[in-house]
Each structure stands twice: as structure tokens, then as C-alpha cells.
Image: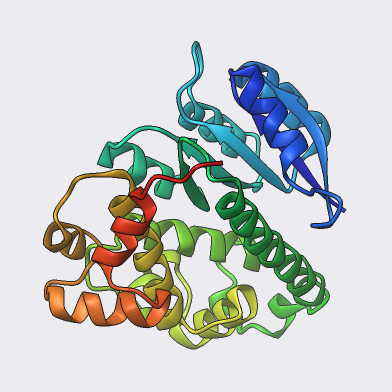
Amino acid sequence: MLKVLLVDDEAPILNNLNKVLPWQEMGMEVAGMARSGMEALRIAEEEAPDLVLCDIRMPVMDGLTFVGKLREMGLESEVLLLSGYQEFDYAREGIRLGVKEYICKPIHYEELGNKVRNIGAQIRSRQYKDKLYNSVPLFQELPAEEDTSRKTPEQLMNQAAKYISERLHYDLGIEEVAGRIGISSSYFCLLFKNRFAMTFVEYVTQQRIEAAKVMLAGTDKSITAISAGVGYQERRYFTKVFQKQTGMTPKEYRDRSRSPEEH
């Protein structure tokens, strides 16, 4: 069972999150519930949750500060933020911290359930790959000159993912990212495919579209501005890629994400 931590300063929402979603059916268990960031950190340290559902707007310690502290603790829990905010800076900071998804309040629980299921599937897939991946002594096969950083393959790929997330609005190439983390392009490709189960181009495209989805749902930025902000200078091409990835145009996605839902 995957462990889930629920964080929201509003007790009714916290209770709904606990009761409305079919956690057992989804192969998950609520390992803790917290009404503040500080309380959530204490629970996270004890339980090491696989998934965290967290409100952005909380007193004393907001959701993004909490996620930052979570990362400082070395926890790589997937995070789904509950947000009523429509500010690009929050979306950008969330992406930098590795936030998986956003759900805008008021919460549409069917949509939330679908996102939780998808994230759960990704967590299980990653855990399975990690087991296989960590059983292969990759560093023993390396030429001596590539073993200079003394970092594990997982650390190298985490470093690469962070670099990519911070530069989605630039042209990115394998050589640039491999050089940034100090390994050869061929070794980078091997590690990257093992870690993420997709090619570098597929991953960058996925991250750009996920960033665009956050901005379309949570900000009033124009589609042209969002397109440029995630690395596509031509809106027409961005629309084509977005539609291929999501099955709808950016405008359709924005309209759907903002349509009133009654639950």
C-alpha cells in the first residue's frame, strides 16, 4: 500500500479528502492528516509518505514552504497541491520543487481521484524500475574518467531533472544537460532511459506540457505567453504538441479546468 499524507488547515476539507476518495480501492492508505505545515513535517519524517496532498494557502507555513522543507529532509514524496491561487510565481515555484499536479479549489473530487490514481501508477512504476535499476552495478562498468563525481545514478538523474525543470523555457539538448552534471552523453542516455522509462525528448516535452497545464489552469497568462514560457516560440506548434499530449487544445484545457463543477 502506498502511504498518503493529507495537509489542509480547514478541517472539513481534510475530512472530505480522507473519506470521499476510495483510498483502499486505489491501493493507498492515509498514513497521516495535518492541519499545519509543521505538523505535516513531523508526520512526514515518521511515515515517509509516497504521496502528499497539500493546500497551498495555510497560516504560519504555506504549502510551498512545506514542500521545500520536505525536499530538504531528503523526502521525494510526490506532491499534489490544492490551490485557489492564480499566480504564475506559485506555479513556477511548485514546478521547481517537483510538485506533480495542481487541483484548483473548489475541489472536483472525481478529477482529484483520477489524478491520484495516475500519480499512484507512476509511483509504483518508478518503485519497480528503481528495484531493477539499483540492482545493476552501473558504476562498475564505467570508464574511470566518468566516475569523477562520486554520485549515484539516482543523484545524477535527480540533478538532471532539476536542471531541466529550471530551464524549460530554453532550448535543451542532451549534450548540455550531460555536460552540466559531468558525464558523457552516451552514459547520460543510458541512465536517463533507465530512470525515467522514456527518451530525453519525450521527458522534456512531458514536463513542458505539465508546466503549461498548471499555468493554463491557475493563471490568466495568454496562451502565447505560456507557450513561450515553456519553450515553444510558435503558438501553433505548441498547440499541436499540447493537443497530441492531452487530447485537447490549450484553450479547451483552460476552459475545462475552469468550468464550474458541482459536487
